[in-house]
Amino acid sequence: MSIDLSSMADMIFDWNKMGIVFALLGAVLAALLGGIGSAIGVGMTGQAAAGVVTEDPGKFGKVLVLQLLPGTQGIYGLLIGFITLTQIGILGGNPEMSLAKGLLYLAACLPMAIVGLISAKWQAKASVSSISLVAKKPDQFGKAMIFPAMVETYAVLALLISILSIFSIAGLPV
Amino acid sequence: MSDDYIYAVARVRSRELNLFNRQDLDQLMACRTYEECLRVLQDKGWGSGSVLSANELLVQEEEKTWAFIRELTGDLSPFDVLLYPIDYNNLKAAIKSVITGVEPHQVFLPGGSIAPELLQKAARESDYSALPEEMAAAAEEAGRTLLETGDGQLCDLVLDKACLLGILRRGKESKNELLAQYAELTVAIANIKIAVRACKTQKNRAFLDAALAPCATLDTEALASAACKSLEEMFAYLAVTNYAEAGERLKESYSAFEKWCDDKVMELVKGQKMNPFTVGPLFAYVIARQREIAVVRIILSGKLNELDDGMIRERLRELYV
Image 1 (cartoon, rainbow over the protein chains, first blue to last red):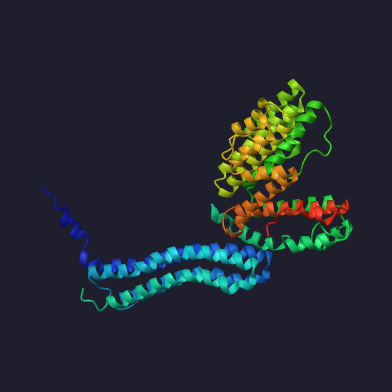
Image 2: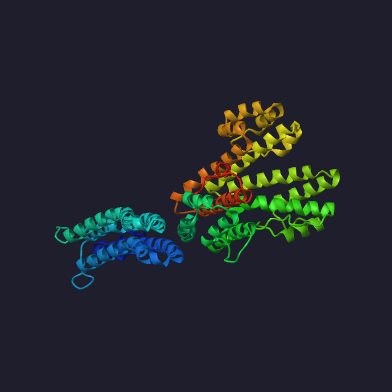
């Protein structure tokens, strides 16, 4: 008796119902990778900040701001994840969608997920350098803030493109 | 891993604010007497608060530096390139004191990676197995040489070369560019110093071959050949290497050359001011503190001996900040 493997796969996976799975995967990845990036980043900057405060507790306020800069990617990831969950009907509504739409949501979440992870780590390196700068020249705090803030630009651009995509997908005829 | 030193580097950056700069040196130079110099140093936080001699004050500052580094990192192996000369000096003292039967008195340097007591015990029992492998092999050879020939210089030769090769090896093993460059520079400078002294004292080729430690930036064969002929030949050889300026300074005077050597090391470590990661900034801080202490020692001894300010200033080395 011959076995038709493709029919068996179709029986296990109903591809038309997999849309919501991919959409949820996108939401999870945005929160997950952004969160991982920020955790690594804030951890690195926290070590540098603690080093400076050990020697000079008066610089706590300044280094705290610099420590928190790589933390925004985690928040952006959470935001994208939350918006996606709302849009795809998991947080109330109808979670039914086509496979194509699910994949579109996944694609829409990827800019924030990937850029969030990478930019948080690089922003942390810039922040650690700025913390060293503040340790030696506290009067240059304003300038020290700008260097890691530049990296934030690309996380914001990724956030923007993810948000625009997620809100636009609902109206697409797929 | 570079990230392991983030906390340590941040603390070092803060501590660097307390390093002496030109203005601090000018303030010390402006002191009229040696005692006034000591007071200024104590006002700046040097020493432990009680009245100390200059030597005690400087020893305490060196100890403070290492205590700070030990607080920052439990692994002092990246600093082996700095500690090996102390260890090998103490090893020489231990071997010589045991073989000659002279009681060692103030010959051991503090701050090495191996306790002098352990070195003495190893030398007494002729069992060097507790020491690192290469050090143990060199110690055995040096002890045997001293016993067979009774020549302390030959014993020193064996240990000095082992020390230089050890520094080179530790520099390479560290996988840190600064440490590798520092090791290379230290060994190259030591080779030049050996060659100059050998040339002036007319040592033979065999001595030079035994003393020079092969390194990447100097051809020790060519250096030894030149040193066997004349100083001019040596300067001509140095002129075609990375150490052309060393030859120029040697033509001026040996103290000008020594100042150049110290300034060259400082030039190398100054790059770490822009590096917020790796062990490099910690290493640079130790060098900076050692240099600061050396400069203060020069000023203090100048003041003690009532030397002219101009004479003191020309001996002052480049500082980190």
